[in-house]
Structure formats: C-alpha cells, structure tokens
Image 1 (cartoon, rainbow, N blue to C red):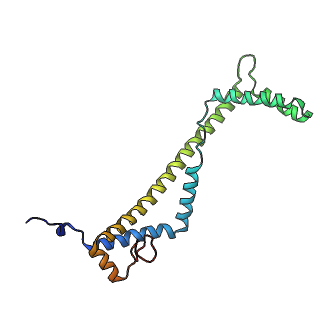
Image 2: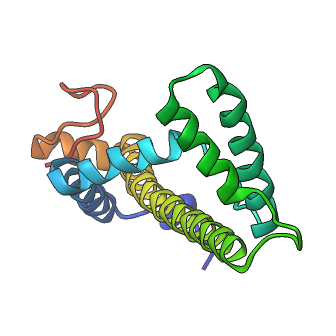
Image 3: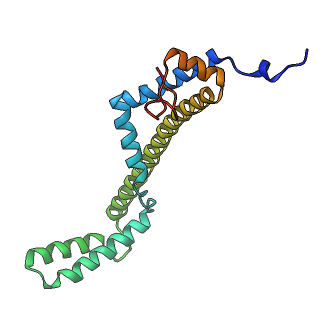
Length: 179
C-alpha cells in the first residue's frame, strides 16, 4: 500500500500533547526563581572579559620587580613611611648576588599557582554558565518548534481552538504559551 501525505502527517493529539509538555518545561524554567537567578548570573558571567592567562613564576618575579621599582621611583617625593614601604617592597623582590632567593622563588611560585587555580576556576564557571544557557535555549527552542508545528497543522490548530487553547501568532498573548 502506498503511503500518502495524510498517512505521514503527525497525529494532532500528539502535536498538542508535545506542545503542552514543551510549554510546561519552558514555564518551569520561567517560574522557578532559582533558575531565573542562575540564568541571570550565567549571562553576567559570560559577559565579563576572561582574566589574563596565568603567568609562570619567572614572569611573576620580573613583573613584581618592575612594579616595585616603579613604586620606588614614584615614592621618592613622598613622606618617610611611604618611602620606607616602597624601599622594603623593592628589596623584597630585588635579586641578590646569586640571583633570586629560595623565598622569592617560592613566593612567585605560590602567586603563579594561585593565578593558575583562578584561571581553572574561571574556565569551569564559564563552562557551567554556557551549559546552563544551552539547556535553557533547548527548552525554549523545543517550545517554539512545537508551537509552530501545532500552528502549521490545520487539524491540530482546529483541535486546539476547540479546546480553547491559546496559539502563538493569533492567540491573545502573542507568546509561546500552552495550557
């Protein structure tokens, strides 16, 4: 027996059921204050610029020494306590006769490890935010697609009208809604 277009058309009751399920999922996302707050936080998180890449310990040593020298130069015209702090910071990061001391290398290593951990934490937070937004967009897209399918099928559209259901684009609200 040859199949006809009428044979392959989806059942209107199944279309309306899928539409109701998809709209209920979208409504659960919309009405849950925790999910709404999580989505706002995820969007905010993804709009923030990513932090600079972590520096190796040698770069930390060079950057801290450069900053200490700049602070010492700026502190020349200040009072005694500010100059003393700038000098102490300079001596803290300035290499000795045999290069950087073990304490300086250890401190730089701790700073570099902290920056690397912060970078990993940032990557994890961004991945979680993207996953949450992708899940929300899938739910929204499913609701839109099922509403379009009901709207496109004349039998399903008539059945929905008989049941008093609001259809998007021609319904009272204009949004993706379902009972």
